[in-house]
Length: 312
Image (cartoon, rainbow, N blue to C red; front, side):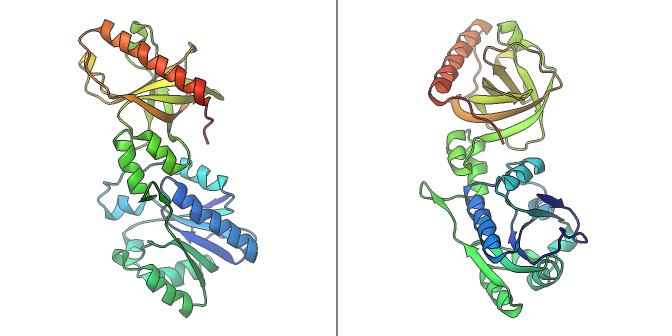
């Protein structure tokens, strides 16, 4: 898959394109529904399948930077590539672009720069200055510029529209099982293992401490799969402040079952499967140790039933 960060560059060979437009944060089941339609339609019409998305996310520019994203950019690109999309444009998003009218966005970027013959969007798609562009307005522009427009209906799961905002809320509440059903895969964060305070080791449960750029972290204690050094391994992860030890800084600590190798400096990915419990303060280290043993037993039963999950 070609990843292009400038509209001055076109994939080679330069052919007419079917273009899906959106932020695609999380590349959840609803997004996959849109992108699978894009790929199928592009193949049917012998067009280039191309995704136009934005870097940074528009909410980082026009929303005061408050939005938290479900994926890092590399995670997002890997997921899009897995759907057999041929090219992705990461359009640099800034204040100037945010002030572009819907018609100029379609005419100058989608048609003139990307050579789009087909546009694929979600039915709730909004674009252009102050998000004034709607699918209804896009239909008018498609007729004006002889484009074919395919609005794709939202995907409904468990009585709700699958959306990035819904999944963000699930993860913030620690509802990782529901998030997985909406994402299509376990929620994943990744980063590098850094030195900790060895509190877990002192209890007999050494942990890998993860430093991550992922922005949304589920609070609590979870059954997880840890992926490091090319291996997927069963694990239990605590995301919290370790109140038993009077800590106050958020940490991500993973105990890998039946594994003692030093992972300092290694890349580590965590897939969240099931919440075991909320983090709490225990009256003693012995009480905490007893609770951790129960957490590990929960994890072992989980993996006996489900096996390990490889990350993507």
